Length: 126
Image 1: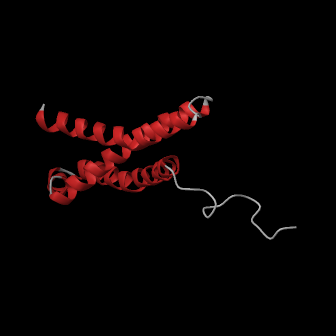
Image 2: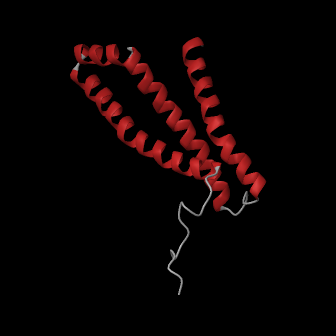
């Protein structure tokens, strides 16, 4: 019997966009769960604590670091959503053709970026 792994691993598989999107889906989900939950709990706590606490929250949320966190959370949301829709289509049995899978693997993060830009443009300019 040959001394080799029983299942394929990263030394055998070539990296492709579908692998990146799968990992990105997990990272954005974890990021939203951890960072998003912290921001949500701080926001709710600040509202419950009164105007002074809310003013402190608002000051940090509108600082450059706050903008980075809020834009990052919205990017994570839209990227995760687009990847989730891609996985949903795969789960119903469609999109497994190589060209189709590759196209949607590349399009998912790009659409996430475009949706994030549109979301913030709507918030800031409407």
